Amino acid sequence: MTGEVIYEVKNVSKRYGSVVALDGASLKLHAGEVLGLVGDNGAGKSTLVKVLSGAHQPNGGKIYLDGVERTWGSPREALEAGVETLYQDSGLAPHLTVSQNVFLGREKTVKGIFGKMGFLARKEMEHDAHEDLERVGIAVPASDRPVSQLSGGQRQAVAIGRAVAWARRVIILDEPTNHLGARQAGEVLQVVRAAKAKGLGVIFISHTLPHVLEVTDRVVVLRLGKIVMDAPTSEFDGDRLIGVLTGTIQTVRVEGD
Amino acid sequence: MTNSNQTTTRKPGIPAEQKPVPLALTARISTLASNQSTILIGVMVLLIVVFSVLEPKFFSALTASNILTDWGSVVLIAVGQTFVVISGGIDLSVGAIIGLSGVVSAWTMANVLKVDQTVSGSDASGPLFIGTLVSVGVGLLVGLTNAFLINKLRIVPFIATLSTMGAALGLSVIISSGQPIGSANNFDLIAAMDPKTNPLSWALIVVIVVVTIAGLFLHKARFGLYTYAIGSNTFAARGAGINVERHLTLVYALSGALAGLAGMYVYLRLGAGSPSSGTGRELDAIAAVVIGGASLMGGIGRIWGTVLGALILFTVQSGLIMVGVAPDWKKVVVAILIAAAVAAQTLQSKNGRK
Image (cartoon, rainbow over all chains, first blue to last red; front, side, top):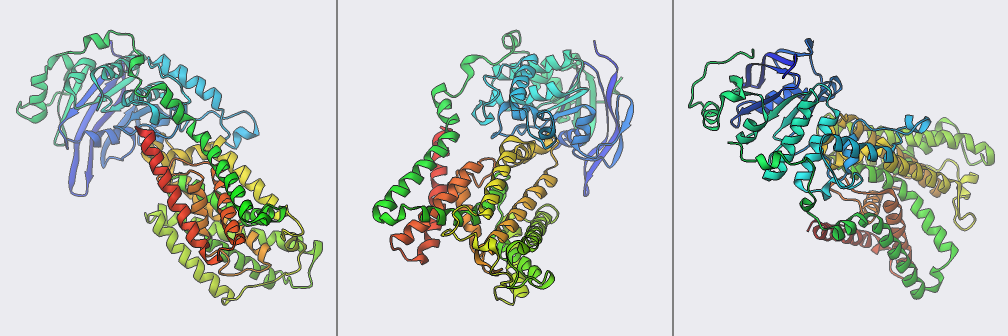
């Protein structure tokens, strides 16, 4: 079902001044696997996401992509290596069109000297953006419409579709179902499955535990900067997950494999 | 636990009934941008009609060419300001750059190139070319200083460019001892700036070409796309891998360089580099940009709007003077126009978001 380990962090730590946000966290992500990352507010989730996406450099520990040790100087480096991140509520530029957002940072230019000067192949990108989104199961009315005219659900669908369309190895989704209605959230979970079917490793961060239980293969629980549990999703139900999250259920840390 | 079976087994895609905005309204909003220029042209025509009725002499080629010549001195900094405003910033230093770059350029031509009143005709083109380079270079330096203050020292653009504005004003007074430096009064090119003899001067043609190129880069090229992206959502731009600091450096450098070019234009008009020649021009530029429909919140704006905004600004100014309003009222009128344009925008976006 799931393939080889594609993304791995070993014993990473991150301090902000005297605050230890992440304390020796390790996890492994396999190809075609959806890994749920949960934890209460301040548990270190967003710090771990920032380390995984290259936004922050850890103070200690190692990062491996396809078995090769990597250090990310910037999100761009992680992006170019195939690690795509969808940040919470902030993936898109509202004044830009759907296709401009889908291609932002990876624009197609016209041929020849004008292309070298950065002149854009707008029609081609509008066409391709539509196709890319359709391929991952998102039907957006028109890719030349500004994102500000889309509903919250449509925006999130475009953001996640963009990430899935571009991701080559790993996709990190930070609260992708936040503020969405049940049906819209269902669409997003469907796209997560499309990413998994594509053979990507998916890291799914969410507060909405039913979504985590529904879509993930494995769940990693963070508490106070430490990973306190790492187990197949089948070992959890809602009550047990909340218990581990809040610390009312004591756990022995489970190693990844 | 799984309560959304019926949603997950459905075919993916966004159902039609989920579209939040009725089509008639979205169509209206999407044509708003193109309507913007229609409105501006309408305002322009209305102004011409009103002033021509009040003062028949207003409707003449001389007035048109006077307005165009004034327009040339502000549209360059207004175009630079358009990039800055779309990126979510503001550049208050552009007026002071006009003074400083004009003074430094005039000083260089007079003292380094030894150009004096006896030089004329084709002898002047070499020094003027070097003078233009110096002028643009001075603007570029101030622009890079702005970028340094904003990116490295994390000073908000308003304060960063306010302080370089003060510094540039001070420096131009120091260099010129407060007096205009007139190195080359009888250059043919300067004579060619007089609207009476030459309605479409060389300098104006250069301005139009530069504005057109800037417009193409804003609306058709990656440079413009990144400018909009940063002003629209800096975080998303960063997430897409855009080097935000580097891009903002280019934007402020562009604004500075265009202000330097405007400094040369004003030098040609006056026949001298005067430290006060650009004072208050930053307000004209901001007025042109907001009349043109750009949002000071970033992410919105068009070159064509700015071009028309600057035209409206000078049509109003010269119209008022011709119908007999004292020139001292000019600044008051500019201030009212800025306030009116921003108020109109706010009302418009409130209606649009409904």
